Length: 215
Picture 1: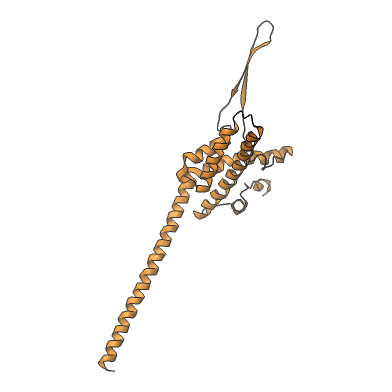
Picture 2 (picture 1 turned 90 degrees about the vertical axis):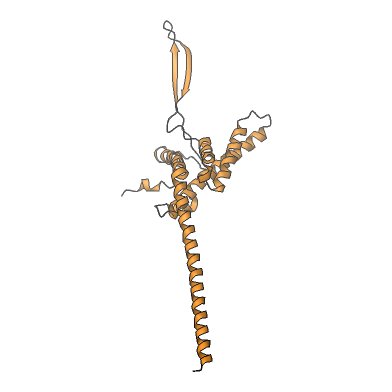
């Protein structure tokens, strides 16, 4: 082997080693970046769940359990398309009676606020807007749109069609919010490697069928 051959082999060896190291570091940086992105997404999803989505999921759960309860125990169907979120109210009636005639002279109704009755559609939208840094763009857009339609649906419109348009939009928006909360919450649970419902993730409808099982 001549000196020239040795030099060529040495150059090729150095070039191959350099190229191998270059490829190794490139792939390592790509993998590190990918792992950093996965870690960030997992941590962000966890914060979204903790700060917003699990609470929203709980609020939606109450509405969906009322729907399930009424169907199971009274046979009453409450179509999701018409009533996407069921609100519960409670009132206390106070009466003042005349001591002589026993007739009611004054009657007042007091709305009772508690952990159950405070779950309402507007509260969901307001909570999403208040914690917008933990919301997805889609859910935030829906919440802002719902608040707008809810506000204007309360007006005393002379144009009945205008009022009905706001009311129709309001129902469609809250239905979309409910389904989005259910799907996105399960999606984030999956990202965090926590228990999630694949059926809910797929269709956006809360599943209470496990209550019908006898195991």
